[in-house]
Image (tube, rainbow, N blue to C red):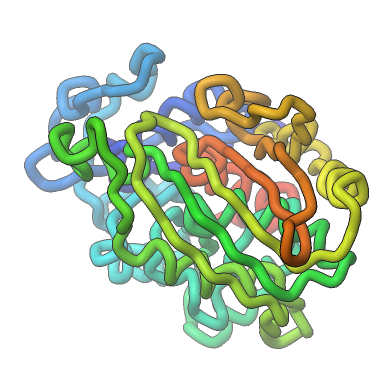
Length: 349
C-alpha cells in the first residue's frame, strides 16, 4: 500500500477493542485515526479512558488519541474503514449507520453474521463470499458495507473442516474448552471459574451450529447455499486466560495420515500482512496442542491440531487449539480487512 488507510476502532476500550489497537499499532497498511467508546469515556485521551490489560505496552500513538462517541457522524472524514468490537445489541444499529454513511465495517460482532446478504468470512476458506458486498450495497442502498468474521470457536473449527470437505465430511461433533478472555474482563468472576468448569456459554453452541454451514457453503452468484454439514456442539468455559481448545469428531472415513495431509494443505494467503505462513499446524506430539505452548504461533493467527486418530466407532477425532482474541476475534477482522483492501473493496467515501 502506497498510503496508509485511516481506520477507526469501535468499542476500543473493551477486551477485543484493546486487541485491535495492539494489532494495528504498527500495521503496514492501516493507521488508527479514531477510537470510540461510551459517552462516559468520550473526550478523554485513550490512555486515560482504557484499563489496558494486555501484556504489551499501550501503543503511544493510539494512547494519545481522544476518544470520540460511537456515532458515524463523529468519525473523522479521512477514515474509510472501521473495526467493530461492539456488543451485538449495540452493533446492530451502529454498524448499519456506518455502512449507510459509506464506511466499510469489518465486524467481530454477531449481529449481522447470519443475514443472507452479509459475508461471513474466513479468508483462507471462503473469500469469494465477499462478492455479496455489491449485492448488499444495492439491496440496502448503502454507500458502504458490513463484513463479519465468525464466532471465535467457529473460526478455529471451520479452518480444520474446510480441507475435510474433499474427504466427504457431512457430520461434526465438537466439545469446546474456552478461555475466560472470550467472555471479556468482567464476563466470568474469579470465584465462578477458579477450580471449576462452567458447562454453559450463552449462544455459543447455536453460533457454531449455524455459522459453520454458511461459511462452508458455495456462493452461486446471488446467495450463499449452505453446505450439507451438520454440527452438534457442547461449549464449556475453563480457567485458561487465552486459547480455545476443541475436541472434534468427524464422519470422515480416512486414515489419520490422510486427514493430517489434508489439513496441512490448507493454502496460506499471499501478500496479506496478518496471514500466517501456515494456517494449520499439525502437531505430532501426543500431548499437543496446549494453550500455553501453541496459542502464539505465527502471532496467534494459526490453528494447531493434534491427536488425529480414528474413532473407535466411526470416522476420525482430533484436538485443535487457537488464540481466541487474535485468530478468533480482532486478528480475524483485520485479516478480512486486508483481503478487502487487496481486492479493491475499500474505495474512497
